[in-house]
Length: 249
Image (cartoon, rainbow, N blue to C red; front, side):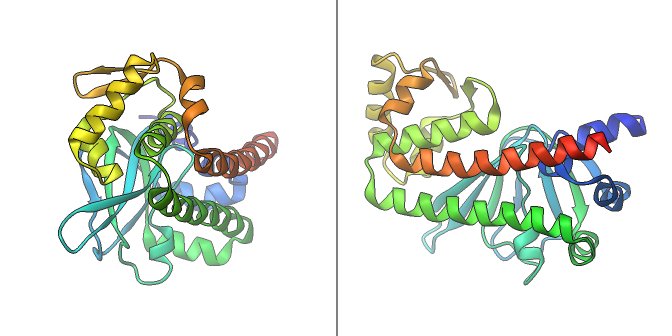
């Protein structure tokens, strides 16, 4: 792949695209374009984190692993995100399990290189800290949602969140995956998704769910989704403004 093609691929990640030219130039020689495959565990809890990742069109999930081996999913990250920086700045160890949900590409960079750039470049540091703040707020919101809201509302929240990250109507979601995400039995997931399908909101296929009526899902989802989406939109708007400024320079 040519240099210009690699740079274009890097910039499909919104955070990288929003960097000012001199900040991006500081990182670009150290970025690697890689393929992420569905089901790949990038980091396990407490595992050393040699790289920080910037997804392009891949989607990854963040989960806490419980003592009994079960997991609680806390977030889903796509092309507007990065993962690995928060831990890399302190312990250099993963705080949870990071798994690829939708295969595609990402950029990665050596943790030490990004750490130095973070210390040296104030504009880069501010942008990345804003993202970490949004991610923390979304994680806290998801925790509260899991405690307070119905399985149906939470199921809709995860579907809509995946839609936002994937930019495609068909999501690689199985009942097993949803049951793990929602911490309920598969029989409960069967009832919820069957009800959503009967209402014409989704269509269930082999290993995938297609959202056929997004506005309908948004009518029954809990308020947690709208709060989290607003925060993400505010960060995305900032990234777009920064990207326009960077590209005009």
